[in-house]
Image (cartoon, rainbow, N blue to C red; front, side, top):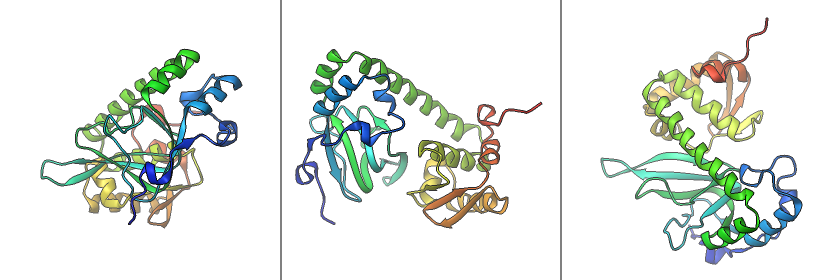
Length: 247
């Protein structure tokens, strides 16, 4: 595989209007910004292109301070105690990462499929935020969301049954991809097990159980069609995710 580094891919100024990239719903980082603010963002951010399997820079001297995933998926792998690696997390189209580098020491970020990032370095973001103060408020909200995500993982791995873990992961991925009829599952069953603390056999068994119950359909190993979102949410074990009761 030829590694497509940012230098080879060409880091270029944002060449597209972000109004056309996000016509219906802006990412959280850009919420509340005016048309003039968005023009400043377009001038300050640059686009980065990566091919499938390409590493994304994470060192302080290379990694962007803020990155918005325009297309594709990013995976974060970390070292395990046995000296190998395991999948820790995924980032989907439309999500913001700040800072871009992995959250764990020795972690590695890799592109899954053709991946485009909209990025800005720290100095550039500081100058932009001076002109658009709402950006700092939005970034603080994203940091709070990251803390909530860490808490969610603690609950997932510490309190839930195997069936609740798999239902939770599928419901979570489904929502993060915009709740499509059929979502992309860019990792293997074994990697889902690494993320949820389950064996490959347990993950496969729980996925088949959901399919037998008519909650999901598995047309391909990397595709999941959600047939009954309400039932999937009920199976997560989260009170907040359950459907409201009708009188």
